[in-house]
Figure 1: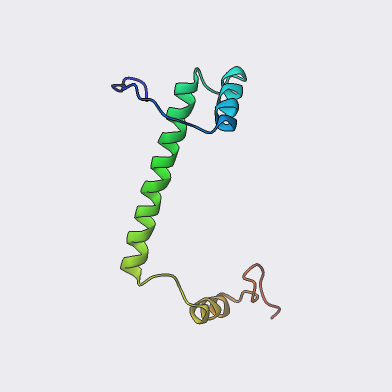
Figure 2: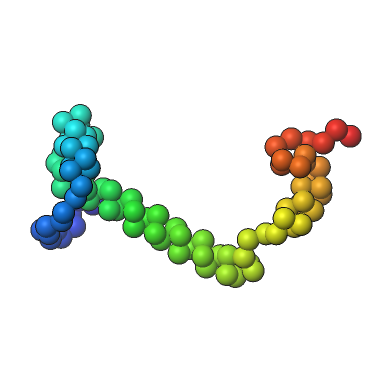
Length: 89
């Protein structure tokens, strides 16, 4: 985020989050509370972008697979019903 134009804003946060942010700064995880909050916001926007991408992918593919489709895929792959191991031959 260095080199980005910055804007100063005021936000109201729950006191426990402020305490945790200050603790993180003291521990060296961020240079300042502002930097800590900026990193948290940046991470949240990445998650939001990924959610949007997942929504698009699901819309294009017809949505989540059904239980029947999952069982068929597991059968074809030779997996146990829990999908974690191979069935005995």
